[in-house]
Length: 309
Image 1 (cartoon, rainbow, N blue to C red):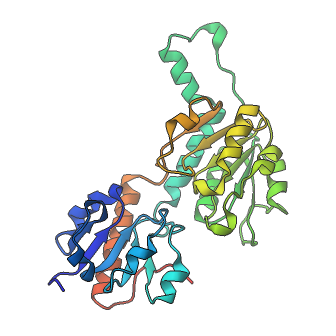
Image 2 (spheres, rainbow, N blue to C red; image 1 turned 90 degrees about the vertical axis):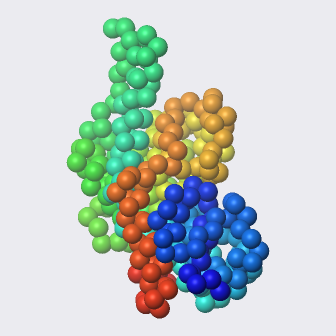
Image 3 (tube, rainbow, N blue to C red; image 1 turned 120 degrees about the horizontal axis):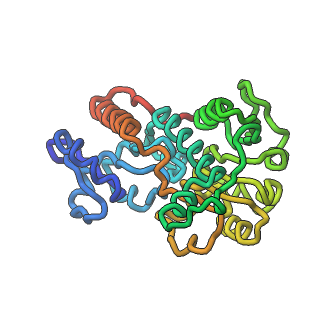
């Protein structure tokens, strides 16, 4: 074993974490093909929780003691598989939900008030008195929220402040002030805007399918700030092209980074590159929890934010 604990960062976009970790740990980066001899030393993996975990890799790391998700979500991690091997998983809960909710409202505003289109019209010289954009007000718009966790509740508070009415649906009742629809389909039928804010797992892959989109309708807006796997993306593109769904505003995609060519001729879309929770403050909060969990592991102390049972 090395004198300092060794950790392995799995995804390239987490490379900036190296500078914070290397003062305390021996840091390896998966995309740089760490030497075979390092396999015996690595005690923690640092991962982005939305990416599938390579279980074959784990089985090659005999000293591994922790899967540390930098993110709040951990849908790419088979937690049950890890637990069966005595391998705990940590994450960064309650750090970026307010920022994600802000982003969801921004997507609603951008789509409903056609902000991106207005910007492009002005820059191209298309602004004339005759070509003024007329858009619907947010006042009275009916927002349906799929999932009423921290993000869903934060979206609901903001939507009400903007004079929209709120209802929601999830598989289990919750003690919240907003009414729960009897089903996802009922929620879609009675909403002008459907915001996807629930957790993702294998059981709800493709939850927002063609039938839900048809229920939302030709003037409806679908907003996704959760996970791309929750939406049947092929059905979404087909519905937008056919006009059976009015518009979509997305921050997450089935494959990331998404292929820009896939969206080149898809109308009525506002697209952002999975930046909903990527604020300076939320990244600092995630980093703090990562460092605390690693420190607890190597001090043989209880983990700070283990994934709940």
